[in-house]
Image (cartoon, rainbow, N blue to C red):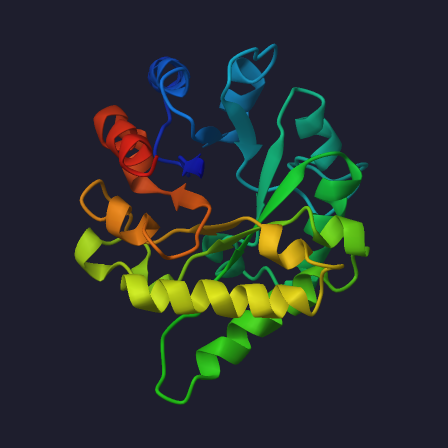
Length: 247
């Protein structure tokens, strides 16, 4: 299982960030799961350089530009140069600020061109009885990766995060049966876009009100390959329980 901790902007103190990274490094030595930490950009420069532990680091976002006169932008090459291995792309909080599917596609291409593994976030705002949300998810996936080569498409990790479940409690997380059906649907969409049987090997994560008390239920028989964790990842004890329960 791949467990990605998205700290967002919850952590604003370097010493606290160092402590949480140390906890994650110890945790990585006792689990078979892969742990990825998506730290705020300033902390990546301080903590990702020279990393020799089992954990990996991710950028929470990357620029759609390739460098130059772009004040405030952080490009894929700059992250790759300090040892960052993954990049979250298309998170709902970035889309809410105006990021379009076209911009997401550019960011995916930049990430892959510079050796970063992109984690593509998708997910509907709400569920309807007519199944329009399925078309919405299909569109997000298709428009994001259709311009990539077949081999590049196979490297993209999908993080399914229904917006109606994000940032709440376990009671608001998706039902296991619904998650299983969505994972099957996502693989069906990917089968139309990926070469050969790559869709069966694609890594699909779930994010949305994941807590220690529901992680095992969400894992069993759902077909997911891991989790993208938000607020629960900044509490060392809670995050450790999630990692252990999902093993």
